Image (cartoon, rainbow, N blue to C red; front, side, top):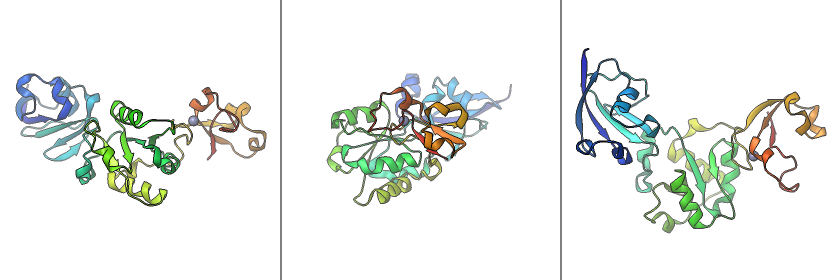
Length: 244
Ligand SMILES: [Zn+2]
């Protein structure tokens, strides 16, 4: 079988999966020709689910790319560290998943973000400690106006939000992270942040208020709200329905 040889470097916590002599260094390795980069990463012992970005010779590639002789491969973990001092670095990096948690004083940006389909966790009763822990555990970018908070060593993924209106702030987030392509309007529940599902009128007839029944054919349904016991004042229906 013809072989292809290349240079590899795995970053950050991906090193945990490597043997000692391959940790945090460039190393050469040989693989059968015509293998995808996904197979090669797996053969190196690193689960592809942990990988967010692969650069071959400096260019980002997808998992199906075939490894070629002489390639230089850099592999970054899911959630490559978001360094607030060097946010411009992100612009070159296409993240597969991007999700946020907003600090308590950023309530105004939550609905506009969700309206655009961006995943943003927020709860007025979260303490600062809750927010930090969730950011770390769920790999959410912590959005805050408090610079001091981002100096905390435990926060690895944070972003300082500049003063301005909610719309301006959301625009800055989208521009700074270069995530225009992640915008999917009306795909997420404004109330609980869960993804919405398409439903035909007849499928959810019993859940639509009488006034709306004759108006729309298609609806967006949030299954989570339906399962929760929302008070009448919080949510008129037990599902979140937005017209298409
Ligand atoms: Zn919901």
